[in-house]
Every structure is written in structure tokens, then in C-alpha cells.
Length: 160
Length: 131
Image 1 (tube, rainbow over the protein chains, first blue to last red):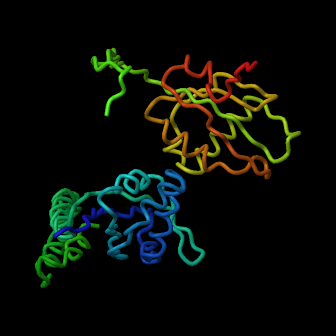
Image 2: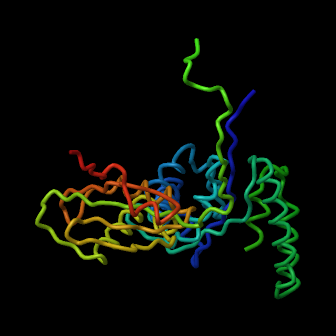
Image 3: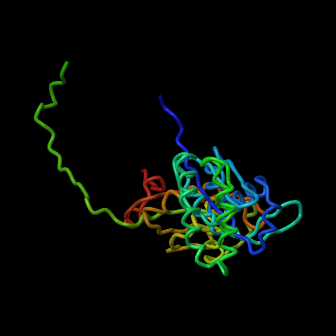
């Protein structure tokens, strides 16, 4: 069998005010990415990358985005991502930047990476706890998570 | 069937292989404008080509070097020099360029060669002196 291979770009949306994240939707990310590709790579690049390009997943609470594109031209989108400076939704501009964490061949590998990345972040941030009460609070909320490993956004929420 | 006057001795030929070809390609182009009275300078021509490149390939794709070696402002012809890697991009951008200052125009690519010497003569413009 022959299949069309894809690349999934796992990105995180970095904003200064995290409440702004809830304004985002996948349409805003889609248009901003297309505009950035069109500016960096012109009509040719925009047309090439629009084949099979979609926003697969957006977690508005944690700002995690999955972008799907064809394997042959993922570099066009990849290289245009740093040029996104703001996302616009219903007339509101959210200044932000997209940080590409991982490029994977399947959603599954990206998800695995995300879980690993979030654990890493958690380990990095735990020493910054101010008091013992705060530390035990985090520990309690972590242990109270009943979701299985598929729900990668649970431990993500803890790290901020 | 074999004609009697052709001898069947093997044709002698010399095979010339140029291994280290030039890093550049040279193109002779001519610009056709709708209004023939429009004049433009060499800098304006280069600006026009760069803007065409930017439309098609964007800011990243159009950032490759090319030079306008010679420009004849009267006949609107010129010679471009471009690295081999940028040849296809430059050529396609020239083909798809359609307007100069809201005036329709088109580029004709007359000759393309890796050797500048080739552009010195064009057999298509050769006028034979017939008696």
C-alpha cells in the first residue's frame, strides 16, 4: 500500500498573559500560519503548504497546538513559524509566538514526546516552590488526577 | 540498400565533456511593455525582477543573488547572471511577472547558457547575405 506521509508539528503558543489563551481557536492559528508562510515563501510556498495542511488539535488551556502537513513540504511551514508575532481572533489581537517543540511522523509519537516534555518541565519547576504547603498542594493535585496517560493536558496544567 | 558514394568507415568524432561547468548561468532577456514609450533604468529593471521574485517565492525564497550584467535601455534587453541553484526560480519568476507600474509587461527569455561567450552570437538573429 502507498500512503501519503505527514508530519505533525507540536507547538506551544507562548503568550505573556495566559488568560488570553482562551481567546484562541484553530481558525486563528490556521490563518496566521498561512499568512506567515505566504509572506516568507510567497505564492509558491503558500500553495505547496496548503495541501493537506490542518490544525489537528488545539488546547486553549495549555496552548498546545498540533499542525499537520505533508512530509514533503513541512519545512516551509516549519521555517515560517517563527515569523508569527500575533494571533487574531474576532478582532482581538493576541501578541504571542509559537515555539515548535517537536516534529513527528505520527500523532502518537508527538503525544509521547509531549508527556515526556511535561514531566521534564514539572521536574524543572518543582524546586521553585516557595513553601512546603505549596509543594504538598501540587503533590495532592497530581495524585488526584484520575485520567490515564492519554490525557496529556492534565500534568501540563500543573506546571504553571 | 546502400548508396555507393558513402564509404562505411566509422565516423570519427571527438567527445568533449566539460566536467567542471560554470557555477553561473547567463540569461539574455528582453522586456516587452504595453506602452512602448515607457523608459526604465537598469535599477528599475532589477527592482521589477526582485519584486516579481518576492511575489512568487516570498522573502525567504527570493533572497538569492543575481546580477544584471548589461542593460540596453533603448531596446529593453539585458543579460542576467545567476547561480545555478537560483536559475529555475529566477526563470519562473520572470515568466510569471505580468505588470510594471500598473502596465502590462512580459519578459522574453531569449537565450540561456552557462557560458557568457554563447550569448555573443545568436543563430536566430543571424542574417545571411544572399546574393
